[in-house]
Image (cartoon, rainbow, N blue to C red; front, side):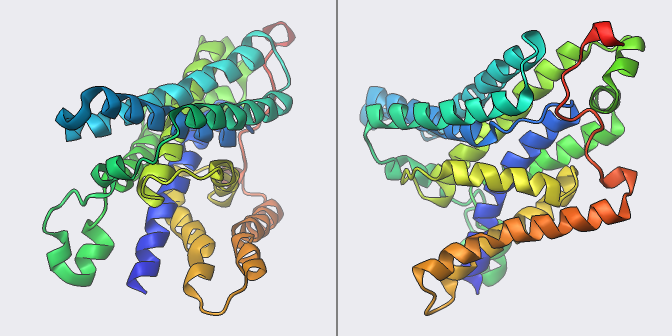
Length: 316
């Protein structure tokens, strides 16, 4: 049971980073279906930066830089994908759904090329990401393993989700961002630069999502690259709907998704087909939540009104 819960929490924090990044993007009115590609590119850029640094530094590498450099590279890789998405949807006014799917295709294919160029296993570097931040956590028994025995990504994901919640609900920047997503024409009339907010929110959101891709590889898979990061991206998109666009709710939702996704691995006698059916459970739960929230029709549980719609100032 302890191993199951630890695995669910580690995977859940990957979902949390992806969904928090997408929530930031969607609060500005951008429906970014390119999230799977963004997470793939974040993972690939972070892993490639790790490979380049370890190759250059050799045996004299710094454990601190071995963590900081990949994190910064993943943030940058995701942000660049967000910048590309914003350029097409804000500047060129392209359809957001089509652009997002193109970003997914580009990100998945490009990440495979980047990793094949590196052609290494990152298990040596992953120990710096999975090592408990609190050294004596293992000595505290089950409590230490469940609460304190995690690497940097778990606590970073929690911090980002809580900070995002505070900014969205308690600051002027968050108020402006939500106004841009709800009614960009009114926000524009109030003097808010809609294009700037959408650019910045999308880049920041994609940067956070890219960090989630790196978390999946370095923390959950212990440095073993697998071409399934895009599946985690689609689940992160579903988590945004499951938690009704609230990053603080996503903390609990991510644990639910993580537990449902890994449950089959801890149930004896489950066939391969059965495991794949178990992995569908997060989507089923999301559909049920979507039906319930639609029936209740409470405004605070609905997506931003202008989600997925490009803003044309001339139509104001």
